[in-house]
Length: 341
Image 1 (tube, helix red, strand yellow):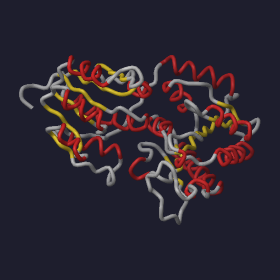
Image 2 (cartoon, helix red, strand yellow):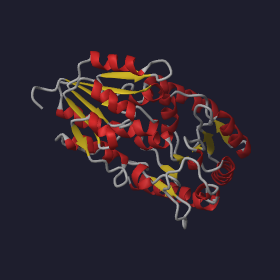
Image 3 (cartoon, helix red, strand yellow):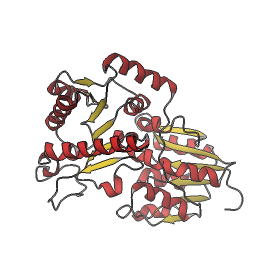
């Protein structure tokens, strides 16, 4: 790496959970190049994951709806990066890495895209957790890797937002968060199932049930809140920072495989994570107490299908009892951990 590396760009365009998991590389890059500028490129809807991260010198935000590829290339080339590490590996990020002008271009061996790099990483996406997949890019160029903990920064404005909401809507008691949303329909336990879980927790524990939602999910989340009844509160519209602050104040999150799952885990919030077409060993919550729930006995678990051709049995047939049992066991573990301190 001679001459010295002074300007570095990391690329992870999307999605929220994937971008958050990729932040695990930042402390190691910063430690290896303490005097370098370390920039990060991501898409607009993921920017909240990186804003305020002390390891990032400049956050480059790409809006594909309003910025063409040539404009993005010109923006990157102006910065004269010495090294670009493509943690995303799709056609756009691979070509951008090639056209960046960087003399060190790191990326994964994904068919023709490997031609865009001069430091090629053998992908282990089907073998190791996504955090390790990202860290492999650093190992390829000799950067020592540490704990690999994702980091989500929360700002004071978001904390005040959450404090005000909880003071007004939850009565100061224990709050259990439910996240019935998710990026793929095949990853989603059904709204009526979440509602039944929320009623059971509310009836047996007297907890407030906070129903979370993201863009395009408000109506569905509202139907879950209504079906649970008086114990449930619908979360307000939030930024990613505000969502993180709401999660910090929740005792447990029950969730589909999603961005909020990873945000909660990064903040140390206990997580009950429901998995079907994706694999928890590769993409599940890390660095927090967690319980993974799957519909046992299915040969098709981990299929990777965004739309299920056989009726989505991993979600439809996953019982309330299975999820509630995982929740109660995790709840008891968190109580025991608290008493042991």
